[in-house]
Length: 377
Image 1 (cartoon, rainbow, N blue to C red):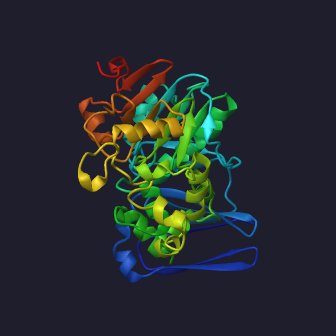
Image 2 (image 1 turned 180 degrees about the vertical axis):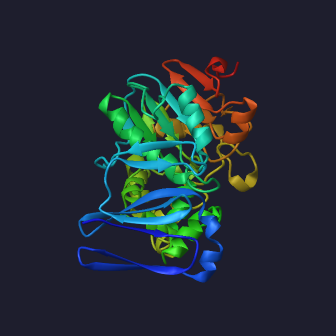
Image 3 (image 1 turned 135 degrees about the vertical axis):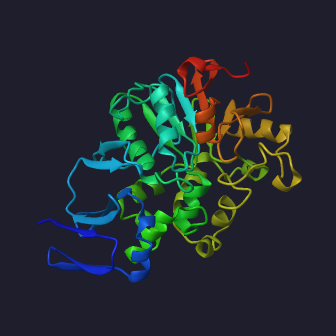
């Protein structure tokens, strides 16, 4: 038995019955006056409750709640220009080390900007006309930070989720690594979050982090992602690796496991653990800028320390997001690559967007595939 409800812009109370359970949601007058901040589209958010799936989304400016969601379900961008369907698939913890079967494409920090995310994937022939994986046995790495700043967080996450399953079927791989904005949202820091997400959560009497709890589809998927991964001798991490990461306890699996264990804790809970204190602080892999910023306050990593780091992690190069540069930039004589750029500005002005690693070649990529060129040229 399925029940469907809508919350409009005016104040009222909706009662949903399903399996003899009553669920109440209230949209009060204050929220109703600000209902336009919901935006036009958001979600869906899928909650696993009592053996069923409850779907919550914003559709055409109204909150919709449906118990017993059917698949595939549509995902629509805020402006309505992009719409694709997603089916659920089993969620598992990724490996921390992979062997490439082809090329590796590296991009970073989509920050809710679906148009720029879609553009680079479509241009570089990662996805086709129906938002489907067409990248074969190749690898796609998204180096963190889907949350915040933009209005299409859910469409980006759902597209990554969708492509992950499609790539696996043909021998390819999609790798999404956690960034500092993931850890911020999951601990309840909403400093950079768009109003529409605040209004949705408030309207349902929830904190926004509740929409990403372990009993939600995307929350479970997200909380199982890695912080560090290797593909061949390429090492990927969102922000950087400080000299503290030379401590032998911080193997890649140890970092991934510890971040997963603490990522849904609030700040006060993390402070009770030495791992939680370090990994989510400024010297940890989600926040450290000292590989790409020389100012003393960032505790920059020396060449000698980088040499030790590459040996410790058996890597040839390290690829970072987090810190924005006008173009994809290399450091330490090409051994550290910064791929985070202003994606919208670079898309609109024809500047670089990421990298493709082709055996012994490294290509800088653009929203015009004809502009792809060797790094450094």
